[in-house]
Length: 401
Image (cartoon, rainbow, N blue to C red; front, side, top):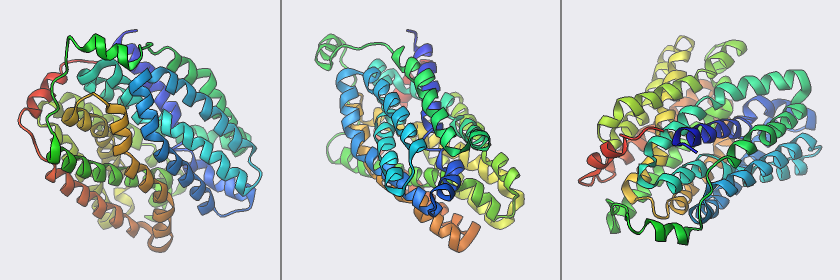
């Protein structure tokens, strides 16, 4: 299987996985709550349970990919996604809703970006940077696809029918795509085969590596807090500025194309520069957009959405590539899972906490996420820049997915 075919399969499967999980509550939380007789905040609390479960499972899924490759782990995730979505469609009480989302958390912990990134690193080692970017280029349309499709399914078949439809798509599309991924030998055999071509030593080690890892984990946590809060509430945030519902959904759908545009910019232009530069520029995007909408209100809604989407798209690449560049590919899956534990835990509270702020302060709650974005920029500025990083990044950018 060619590298492009692998990236296309993983990117398409990731689009489905994100659209049917992470982006699901924004469109279905209200009808779920109305049908079950609970508050929408309860649905988001159940979604938070899924994020906590995914945080706990992430390092173990990453370790499994390090040992056996991504194919069996991702295939299993499609089966669990289908089961979790079916359980959501059948949920008739609050406990059943929470249990269904917990099952979804198992799938999310083993089937979203971290698993896909670990898969291509297991396949291509230090040359995986372009493949990671390629996957995010495909999956950048997850919100653009997920929100309108979920809304259309809900309007025609109800939220239960929408969940069942997404479950079927995992079995009909996601599972066959992941089943096409190359098989890999056990890690022991792979390591022996690779011993003749040892990978370049990691650029950071010891205390410097630990400091960078802590800063990186903080940046990832802020990134996922903002991303999750916007994924859950962006249409409502835009409405709070005075934008109508239909227009708010249309503007929110710009996040996907903006993410892809940001990733194309990173892939084509920013890779020529220091690899931390794109992450630092991206960290500025959401605060700048929040400032624009805070000062101008509804007329700046599209500007805010595009800036947020572009910044989030580039930072998603950084989540996959910075650990690879700084620490190397050996044990990447487990390391990535550990780095993402704080992010997943923070994510768990993001929809609920930002929702409370939105209830109380309306569009002014964006100043909270803007301030967090500024602190993430500060953390990125503090990550040590080892000699040779730019040279290695340039060398790795020559391959194409």
